[in-house]
Length: 276
Image (cartoon, rainbow, N blue to C red; front, side):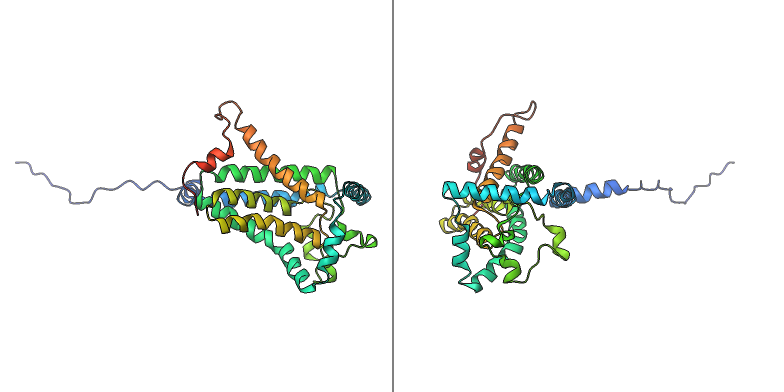
């Protein structure tokens, strides 16, 4: 007579496969897609800062180019920077506020704009982001090929460095010197960013007071950068043009084989509901 002994031991389960660091990062990125955008802008900022070592032009050429711009503006009736500044310096409290706005405004407003756009119109966000990055690449090229000293360096012509003289902010020394190209007046990306934000936001919001506020933003930036003697009128015009070129390049890129048909930005804006 045979007997069978039944095992009561629990079956041994195969160990769960280990998750690689790449897989964990991929899951986090999938769960929080905004991290990708933060990474893109962080990399762009690092590359921009590293590129400064290559785009800071010769000071003599920068002053020569600036003098040519002044002569051009004088000949065309655009040389109003001195008039704007002379009016502003009669209101030092306003100048102090504009100095602070110049230093910190676009570092706060530009990221806030992209966060808002990402959450409210994600379908349009990549288009605007890519145009923004393309415009910055164009600007870096111009900085390298055409260095221009800002008006505040022409004290003998009557310009006042309000950052230094009024608010005791030295862009040419200390920790701040590493964040500024002293010969990057043209194009003014301060104005370029504001121009982009004003136009895009005005197209997207449907509340008229908000639309007017969006359009007033680039006007305020223009007053700030000219009144503080950091940019010429031509700089602002160039900044707006460079930003527009960024959008054009992205549109042309969409014509490349396999990338679909060219789609005007106004068609993208009209599609879907307005965010506000």
